[in-house]
Amino acid sequence: MKFGVVIFPGSNCDHDMIYVLKKILKQDVVELWHKSSDLQGCDFIILPGGFSFGDYLRSGAIARFSPIMEKVIDFANNGGYLMGICNGFQILCEAHLLPGTLLHNNNQQFICKNVYLKPGKTNSIVTKKLDPNRVLKIPIAHGEGRFYADNLTIASLFKNKQVMFRYCDKEGNISNESNPNGSIDNIAGICNEKRNIFGMMPHPERAADPELSNTDGKMIFDSILASIK
Image (tube, rainbow, N blue to C red):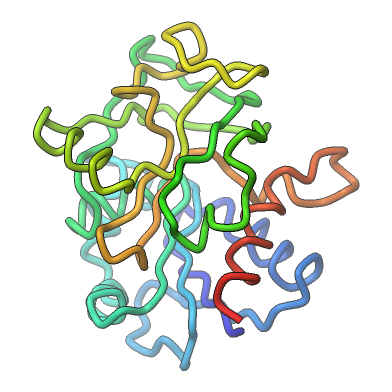
């Protein structure tokens, strides 16, 4: 499979993602500069984390209008696989490829720590091969990660099984105490109705190398690869 990692000015997780895809998962990977209009025949596009354009205005609001995004949006609307992680998730919401928005954390502070996630039953390639009863430990690093949407949208996300991950504690309990940023219903990641566009705030690429003594994030990438072979 050929992955494309889009690089914006201010991206700082792009090479983490490229390293995991290329060195750990042995996949074909190309770098896609934000001013390009060529997706280079990629099968799967990833918008990485970071601070695109310095997070000025709103996180992801400027990157959404980068030249490559026109091609990325067409690619996704035609059924291509697209995933946004952290800042990438924010960009997907700004581009209206995913519902909702990401607001400032409820403590108004940047949060960088490991959190626990409970996979949802989305039948998406991201979670398809995950054990729904197996809690994942994945890092977060964001200042605007509080997922918000109106009540009808939230109800629709759960009804259509589009909630991929929810914040929980080590035992898998979902509560206010296990919610690091105030996201509605502890939502940490969602997909679209067609299940080809995915967004999540935690960083699985930061938990995919045995050298880091945590490979829970690799399970997410393994699920993707196993589900689309």
